Each structure stands twice: as structure tokens, then as C-alpha cells.
Length: 131
Image (cartoon, rainbow, N blue to C red; front, side):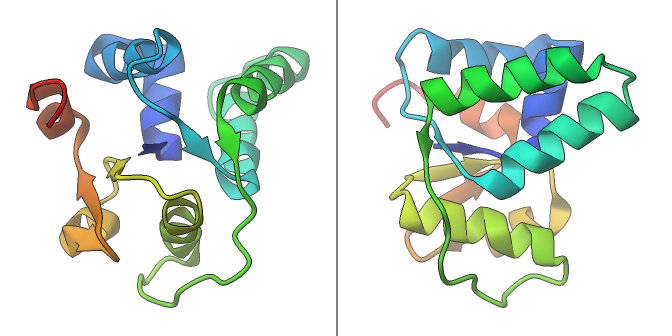
């Protein structure tokens, strides 16, 4: 699974359903796929938007790199209006993720991309395990 930056930020900073989904990854319930684009954006948002200490944000980045399958996307599709969203699609495809969990309207509008389901945290959280 790929957790988009907005989901990771919500999980780490706010809690709720995003945190519950993230905790299922921590418990080994899902294989997390991540890439440099998501990691860089996450670190920047935590520091610049939410005033996290840079060292704390860097530590979270390191923990995610250790936890997840980190992939570099060589070929980025040109599907979404926002180029950052294209990076998320590439990470999912290269990392052979089965789902992207996001709150991004442009990604959600696609529904699926090359066999990868794209859904909200709420929808993912409502899917029974194993489906």
C-alpha cells in the first residue's frame, strides 16, 4: 500500500482514522511502499506547516525508510494535473502496491491506475481485512 503524504501527515500529527490505518502498517497488517517524493514532501510539510523540529521530522523519515519498501520511480506517468500526484502513481506501480490511500481529489478521481486501487482513508478503513 502507498499512503499519500496527506494521510501520513494526518496520521502523525492528528490521529483518527489515518492513524488507525498507519498503525495497521506498523503491526505488519500491510506492506508499505514509499518513495523519495513522498518522504521529502512529508518532511517539509511537518517542519514548514506544522512547526515540527527538523530533527524530529528527519527521524520520522528515517523510521519510514526502515519500515517501508522504498522505491525510486524511474518513469513517471503524466496522468494528473499535479505532477506530485504522478509521483505517487509511479511509486505505487513500481512498488507493486495494491492500493493508494489518499485524500487528494485528483488521485481519487482516477479510481484505479494500472491495477492499483485508489481510495480514501474512510473507504480503506471500512474494507474488511483480506479484501
